[in-house]
Length: 387
Ligand SMILES: [Zn+2]
Figure 1 (cartoon, rainbow, N blue to C red):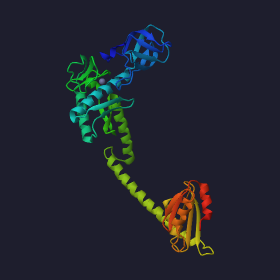
Figure 2: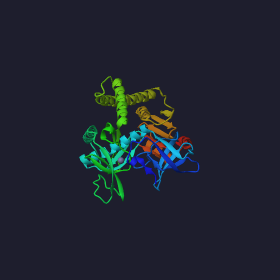
Figure 3: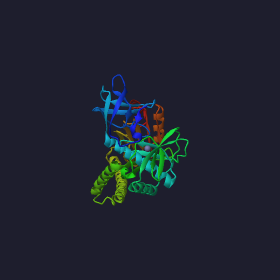
Figure 4: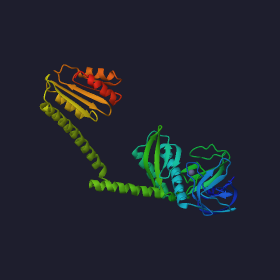
């Protein structure tokens, strides 16, 4: 068993220990005692160095030993250890912030924390509640940050599992239980590293809510992470404000108004496009000479059959004695429109032709479209159409 110095002191950043065992390549070391925190309980492992060699991973092994994985071998018997303090302290802030937020959510809304994840960018907790409204988020943030300002002590004690431990969430641990307490607020069984008073958590920010399997996943940041994120948010909002020539506070209403305007503009653009297509169809009818049978015919190759193309075809066949055929590549498909006096049922012609080769389609007697599995089949059926 490795003696875990971080159990009683989370602030040891440099220490000396004996190397009691190692892998044959001397890149996996076992110390008699360590302040390096291994990945566990939702908190990632520490980084740092041993005898100047970079530590890449710290592993909590099943037999109670902690493995220190190194970038290159260390052959000495003694280890001079240095923990990447900036990373560790950040983890202590996020982790203690989690205890506090979980306690506040239970106190205010009776919402039990189900799980916790400490990520590289942000952290999340899942709470047993279907939803949390904006007002509740504000309440939780106010309460948690006020307890930060009160700078309440965060303490560690070891008690036996048979005692009444008064925990926020019951533990399944037997024997000695490590209890991390925020004065007057929270008692949790936990093996992680924590700050010594709530003031060191720094500001707490909730930034995102997500519904996951009937629970709410809450993304939060503490300390410098919260400050940097809030500043990045400010910069993004300020850029939006500048683009809209407005203040940050006015931006949401302005953006909503711009979206509405854009939707209106898009709607009238669509309308104009269709009107233009109809005008094209009418013009085409005027410019097209009828054949010996008195029918005006248009044969069009196109990339795809669009709403505009249908409008053009319908306008063309609004005149008497007209047939409009379009063949499209992607997907392989055809459109047939006929005038009322053309003596053809477009829906029947298309349906019969495409279903015969495994395609699908149909329409009404005057306009119809269908698709076939590939372009070759299209080339095969078109010459046989009674057009
Ligand atoms: Zn903890």
